[in-house]
Amino acid sequence: MGLVNVNLQTRIRNHLLAVDFDVDNELVALLGRDGAGKTEILRSLAGVYAPENGAVEIQGRTVFNSALAINTPAAERHVGWVPNISALFPQQTVAENVRFPFRRGYPLSDHEAERRIDETLEFMGLSSKRNRLVNDLPEQEQYAVALARTLVLDPELLLIDQPFAGMAVPLQRKLRHDVQRVRRAIGVPALVATTDLEEAYEIADRIALMHDGRILQIDAPRTLVTRPANRGVAELVRSVNIFPATVIERFDDGVAVRTELGTFHVAGLDPDATDMEAVIRPEHVRILAEDESPAAHENVIYGTVLETTDYGALFTLAFQPDGAPSSRVLEISVSEPRFRQLELASRGRRAAVLPPHALHLMDLPSDEIVVDDNWIPDRPEASESQEPLS
View (tube, helix red, strand yellow):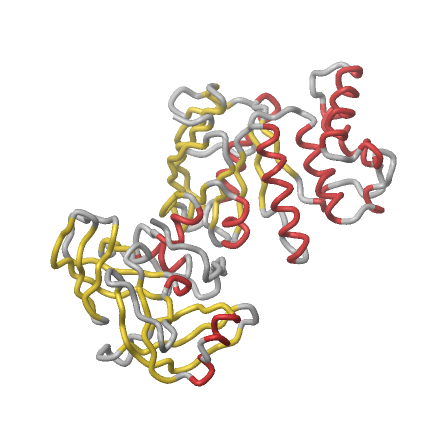
């Protein structure tokens, strides 16, 4: 059991929200398109929404249990909801904004409230700005005020909904770091709802990937994108290289699989099934230099670079393996320096390596998850020097 235990079932829009997960001293990102159920989970934890069935425990206290008719009021749950900066009072000072929660009947003496305000402003680096109007601060400091307004109540759980929507990308990245730093410093669990895979990847200790009211997979960010549980997860995290695979031999360190692209060694797995699907991230397929020889244990395929797409720091290659169906084209990501070094602009025939530890096997889909083209999260681009998950 974690510090926060969530088991909820309730009808939302056109589907059933049914989730069961724990949160320890960590930040968990609820990742999914609008309507997946993320905000309903946060509102259920905060106590502003009563789900039809289930139970919620926070730091050992049962705050909701439909079977026992327990529904602790929001003000007594010790849950902090971090507001968007648009919810701040722009014509009030920093200190007045941070003092706002105590105006809502929070049972604390004026002396203790002022002590907490002073400590929170100091912790957030806002002491020198306490008398400044929020409207006069840059966005980064406004967000620090929003965090301070939540932390001043000493919450046992932080909830953050779409925290950086609409902000410039450089500011988003800075604020993601700030939120993770603050969470670790105060040592309480946190849940962040987001539609942005890159944001979830950067900020979270674990990501819960949601689709139509259910959690498809909850894992560390790198595990989620390199070891998807099934095709639905793989497609939602933009794992474009997916192809049928049949296990033909088993070894101490993995299995051999037969595919349309060739026979490959997959390390670190011993699946029960025989017919499966293989998946590999585009950034983990390695193009060899013309004078480079692969290691004996590596999976090598030969083929033709059909086209290249320039994304600035990265290039994407469309690679057609020899002997594979014409529709079976691998996507390969290459860093700009490596692209220049290998002279890939000339395209032509090349050798590519599919590292045994980077290949992953998934069970065949038991049900169909329809991926909406209007919401496919951007995948975090890994550098070419990043080692595949072992």
